[in-house]
Length: 467
Image 1 (tube, rainbow, N blue to C red):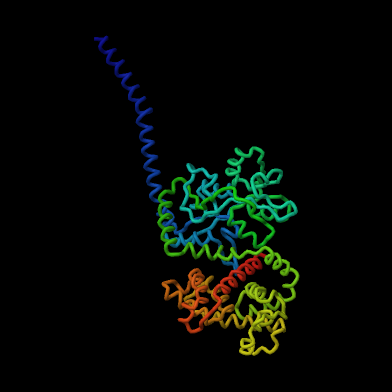
Image 2 (cartoon, rainbow, N blue to C red):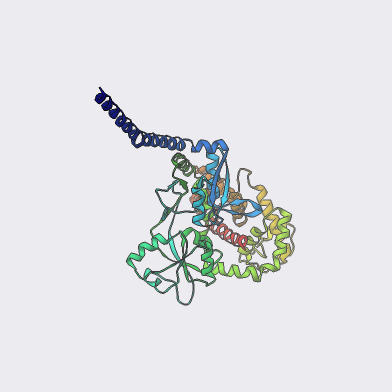
């Protein structure tokens, strides 16, 4: 009897140990795994709801001309800024920006849950695709080696980088250089953790370093201020700019994809690209350098009159000065073959309409030009919003309000939006073709010249804003 009892007790002890081990080694891990899966699944499906519940999308970015910056009158601008505002509006919330310096700080904000999205001109290259999710690509750029014009010339090939000092920001461009080093073992570079791309471009311009690497959009923007910078050669075919999300943001990622497709289809992305980059194609090294010199040598003589006239007529003085430079290069005695004269190159009929007798008096001419601009602006339909309103004002100043009206009517007849500058860019050149201009009241117009005029004034205005 005792033997059977002892046997049963032994079996019971082993059974208890088996059950305990099974629970510890199998059941608990399974429950934990299932719980974690359910938690993550639930989180992924409620990220957007959480953002909407708090009514705020938090975006981490960096302060730069291509991303996010404070513009005139304290308003904010930048491609990333406008994209983030548009997405926040799409999901029905406000947007709050957190500004950080450098890729590492930006990614830390995502890692620590400080921000929902990183919108900072980041490329997928070099980022951990397992650790982060990426929003849809919205811009393609090249990684370019950038140097300054000097007696040594600029490198035209990877081989010509031999012996050159090449400095890059930490966390960017090293991956592509590493790939090139396999083919060119002698290739060397330094990483500067204290400098971003824009600062290194400035150091190249100041001759503190020889060369750096920059995304093509950044160097295109920066060349306006430092025209001696030369994008020497491409390091890659292209890289895609995209927003960065934490690895638990798949639902938000899916919503972004739908939003961007709709945004592109509606022309929103094209409008923003034209706003920030459309005028950069007119970059001219010699002209830009001459303009920068005149900012210091000539502009101080007339600056107070630009400021006074702009204030009187509700204009931005830097835009007024940019127009004047395009018209006369700030020469009060300037004269064209067509008879326009003075700082703002007024026609004789316009001067008479404004009650101006002496078009060669600099102050009088500036104030008259400002008054005329204000009159043109008041005639523009209220449906035209900024910045298109400013671009159309410039076109009207150059070619006449009647020709601008013809261009807007032509755009409407062709199924385009007459209030969008990107559409007017397509139709303005058509006004020089007889089959188009003969249909309209004001006839032939040099529409392509008006486009160039607007682009150049925009470049000068941007430089003045920076200075």
